[in-house]
Image (tube, rainbow, N blue to C red; front, side, top):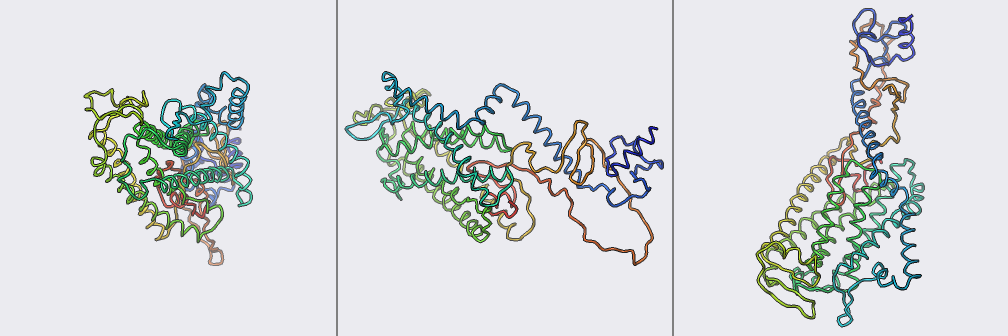
Length: 505
């Protein structure tokens, strides 16, 4: 009866993997799996490429278990809750703040700091810097969180139907890229306007004049604090939404960007911060979602413009700023330490021989702020280290571009959600077996059965030349990782997808 049951199982699933090699072999002991008619058909042959799909699905199972463990933790549950209720939480916080401001007059001394710029100087009509600026930054973190969710869900999501997107992953990517495009277009334009109206427009020498200038215009201060709030909010986003394979790269990028903005703000170097933000953001303006609109000619133009703007902005103009740090700072900044407001600025005095003076600008906005050769080289080293990374990435972009020009098929290694189960053709049951789209039942731990070629004499009239079908395992794509902002493409389609020109979207 046991043999009969085994025969029925193999008859029902002629493509069953051999999970127990000894108990599932045929009577001849050669390890072949035969169909009931004792004939090894073409469907019974296990393709080698299926093992790649097996490894891919095993990796997905591991990622799914990791995601489940994260969701079971208290922090994971909190992040999941915030991610699902971004609009509601933002609306409630803003409503609570507004009602408190309107109903409690004694609290307005504190609540107005969330809405208004602090440290206004009527005599100069400018604004100073201080710790009360943190209230405005917190306010805009909440605003950006709610605004991003509202725009993506209620403005951009309906557009996905107009451009013919049906998959959830494509809709989400479309909304994310559209939101980034909206934000970058707005703040890059504002940043360029501030540069154009400034004295350092096309003159790097004026990046360092009048240091330390402890006041700035209201528009410039709002622009810089809003940018700072946006990058802090991006740290929140990558943690409350479903993680992607480039989670830690994105986290690192956002933390470094936020740290640079914080230190440049405290050391009164916001002018060069504005310049570098504009040089970096202009590249992201050339990463539109043309792939969703199927405009191939526009994609070809965008690809060339992308490489040209990248090279000019990040390797020519950026190095000009680095050279200005090296050559022009000693000419324009008198080394030493200063203290006091703009109206009562004192110094310079000799730089103390301790570490404490480096933290003074962050503890007291009108306290000691120093500049010497060591601080200059610290900033310049960080900028040159970033340039080295940019050069490595640009070299990879050139190699990818050459491969694209030569033609050939590219693998899609763009960042996707960890363990995403959407659009999968393989499902797994509780016993470890998987059911494929063509009805095959395979086991995750099974060993492929090597079937020797079957020789049979046939007549010429029996020969049927049929074009071989592409292996179904092409759906198992190699998944790579991307970084936000500064991006490291790992293959051709990665780059094409980044600029919106991959045809396979």
